[in-house]
Image (cartoon, rainbow, N blue to C red; front, top):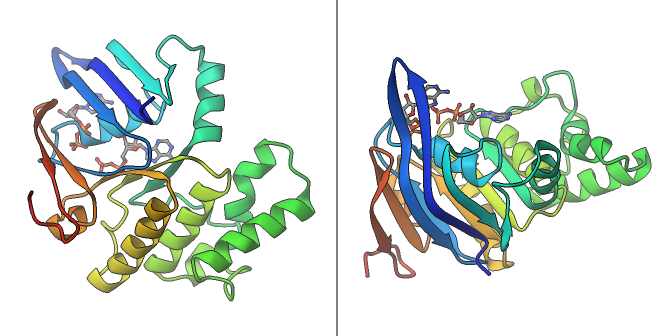
Length: 232
Ligand code: ADP
Ligand code: ADP
């Protein structure tokens, strides 16, 4: 089965007039693929990511993660799936300001009842992997934007999720730092993870294999890219 499958997914917000943030979206994301999502502001990119990541439920339609229908699950089950299968990376990092890098990365393990020694070991391993082995006990304020995003990526990976969702992961970073983050995503993809990322930046999207273009809550087109990012 596909990593993600959406069948005629609609998400409607009622703000006086109904707004269709997503409007009958059909999308299949094969396991192990690398997908970028692009589109103008308000086209539904964040809503799409939130629906895929079980942060939000659609108004209509069906969502499957790894063949499992999530749209009929209880909130509790959806929370479990999200914790076990999905790693989120946000533009704004969303780190806890008073916690150190290691504590931030280990936080998802606290909720799973993993003992402290094991948590620290796993978090340290991941921070070393993203090149922050020498910043374990720094708080976010003591880290650069790129370092904070790497902490956030390490945290997203701590439960070993098969699906990595990133909403503008390089949005707050300079070009060079952004490129480093992209290399990290490429490694994750090469290891067999499924990666879906929203970006406004064409050069960032060109790291992916496919670009899904959204417009007014619909898929306008899907572009297949070759290895150097040119349209096939
Ligand atoms: P994008 O990420 O592409 O900017 P969004 O998914 O954030 O687009 O939003 C798509 C549409 O849905 C926009 O018109 C936006 O105003 C609307 N929308 C998103 N979230 C909400 C919400 N919580 N309440 C009302 N409208 C919303
Ligand atoms: P935008 O794409 O409009 O710039 P953000 O990137 O700040 O907005 O957030 C994207 C979406 O992810 C928003 O709908 C927001 O509600 C949601 N989001 C951001 N941070 C978190 C979080 N820590 N937990 C759950 N949802 C979040």
